[in-house]
Structures are given as structure tokens and as C-alpha cells.
Amino acid sequence: MSEDIIRRDPRAEWIARNRLHPLHQAMQASPAETRGPSGLIRRNPHAVGFIGPNGIKRIDRMNASGPVSGGGRRAAGAAKEVELPLHRVENPDYYIAVVPDMVGGRLNGHDKDVIGQAHKLIGEIGGNGAVLTIVFGEHREEAFDKAGVDRLLQLQGDEYEGYSPELRVAALAQIEKEYAPRYWLLPDSVAAGFELGCRLAARIGERPATQAWQVSVEQTICRGAGGTSDLTRQTPRLLLLAEECADQIDETRHEVLPVELSGTVAGSASIRDCGQVAVDPNAIPLAEAEFILSAGNGVRDWAQFHQAAEALGATEGASRVAVDDGHMPRFRQVGATGTWVTARVYVAVGISGAIQHMQGIGQCDKVIAINTDIGCDMVKRAALSVIGDSSEVLAELIRLASAYRQEVVENAA
Image (cartoon, rainbow, N blue to C red):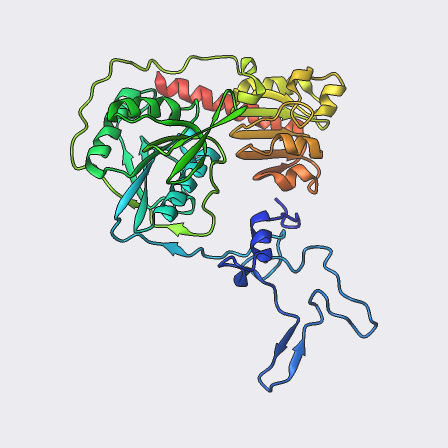
């Protein structure tokens, strides 16, 4: 990918505007005036706002005064790498337990909101509180520290893989016995949080608050009647939290010290997970799809596009232009005028990135762009970009997917 692409960093820009942020000074550009070793004032003619001898004031039109990368060259408008201050909890007075969904082995936005709520409660309670995060099985998360995790308890074993609510609740009951958390926080989601929270509440004898979106130590406001009314109640020990219940942690790093259970988990499973049932990816509604291959005006070979979606096991999507031209049905349209998607991976093939389309993919975790235009908005938004002809890239993807499947079959045999 070319380094000439200008990428904005909204977080860095917000820190640069917020004088109360602890990293504000580190994000500032060189001052317009400095005092030299001789005591004379030296002016920086390149600084924004400098008035030259011709009386013209310098204006920043390319974000040149914004954060710079560590290499000295202002590559792609990237943010300056700043080490966040480390938050330590030496000897916790109490714990607040968080059980994230960890869909795909990583923290999603809902999980991070719940961790942010845990720190908000610690701020209200005071004292030396720590956030204890419980993870089942293997994970792929590499940023527990920036998400706000003080202690990490990872329960590994084949018994926790797949759908195993009974054994997981038995492990949470053992954590309740050993750590006695002040609060239990789980995401109110269909992924796992709601069921685990209800089972745990019955196990430890608590009456949970569901769809909680405003929580304090004294009272909790929950959404009721399909989100049309609010219910206020005293804050219980176990909370099932709605999305955006609190701000995510973004100003500190945390230790993520590993902890373990000293006792054994006593429990048996009456439910057996027989694995996932194969379904047609195109039978999954766009709003619920986790992997979307979306086509735009840059796609010329539509038969190849459908073949690529089938080979990758992706749900098909499209831009408004592709739908208006009759290449895809209307219910496949992604964007503000179509369907808002929350996919974990969104592959945009030949989509330049109109504002309505960018709004529709705003909640996607990873965006991959395949395009010939290196300066289009979709390339700027993407976490990974492939600059080239879409037909050649899709042909290579089909070849790699077929080779991978063949290798899996041979290894199984």
C-alpha cells in the first residue's frame, strides 16, 4: 500500500483538541515561536498562522500540523506513537468481574463498553478496585491492556469450547466462591452474554438487571418494552449491559496480570455440542452476517464475483450503483439507504466509498478494500487495501481458497 495515502486518526485529533487530556502536550506540533540559547526569539516560518513578509498568513490545508509518525516523515497523516500511561493495581481491595462475549476470540465494541462500565463503577466506589476479565478457551485478542483489563483469568480446556453454558456457569460459580466480585457485568447479547448471565444469576441467587444502559452504584436504568421506555431500579450485583452503556477505556494501559483458580470446577454437562450446521451464506440477512463480500461499480465479471463469494463462504453485498444497474437485488444493498451492517470482516470490491455507503459499514470491525483508485475513500477507511484489478484479485482468492480446502481434505484423509 502506498504511503502517500492520507489517513486521519480521529482519536489523535480529539486528543490534540482536548487540553485536559494527559497526552495533549505530546500530540502538539512545533510551536510558532521558541527562545534560542542566546535568549532571542526564533520564529518558525512553517508554523500554521505565521504571517510572512508579504503579509500572507500560512493556513494548514493538508493537516500538516497534525500528529506525525515516529519516523520524522509525515507519512499518511498517521498519529504519533505515544505510550499510554500504565495503570497498576497492586493489591486489589475488591474485584468487578467482566465476562465478555469474545466473538471470534476477540473483544468487540460491546465487550469494551462493558469493561468501561466496570471502571466507571470503580471510580464511584473508590479504593483499590480491579477489573477481573474471564475468558473461556483460546483467544486472539492482543489489546487487553488498552481495553482496561487489570486481571485476566483464562479457563482453557476442550470442555469450554463451543456451546457449553453449564460448564461455563460452573466455572463462574467457582470464581464467585474464590474472588467474591463486588459486581458481575456481562453484555446483554445473543452471542453468549444473556444466557450466561441468566444462568449465573439463578446459580448465585441474584436478580439481574437486563438491558442496563445507565448504571451507577445507587441505581440502574434499563430499557424496557422493546426500548420504548426506561425502568429504574436499585443496582443489583449482576448486570446485563446494553451497548454504549459507558465510554470505552482509551487513555490508559492496564497490566493484564494472569490469575488462576485454586479450586477445581465441579460440574457436568447434559448438553452436547455437535458442531455448527452448514448454511448458505446468502441465506443469512446482511444485518446479521459476519463476513461480507460486497461489489461495486468496479466489478466487471459478475459470474466470477458470485464464484468468489461461494469459495470464500461470504454473504454477498453491493453498493447502490451496482443495485441500480440491476446487477444485484435491492435487499443486498449496503449503506445508509440500504442495510447497516456490523460484519467482522467486510471486503469491498470496486467500491469507491460514497458517504452513504461509509455510514452503513461504520460498525464493521475490519474493512478490506480491493480497488484501482489508491486515493478513494474506501481505501482510506480500510485496514488492508489491495490496489489492482478486481478480476485478477478475485481469481487469486478463488485459487487460494480452493487450494486451502484441498489441503484440509488431504490432511483429514
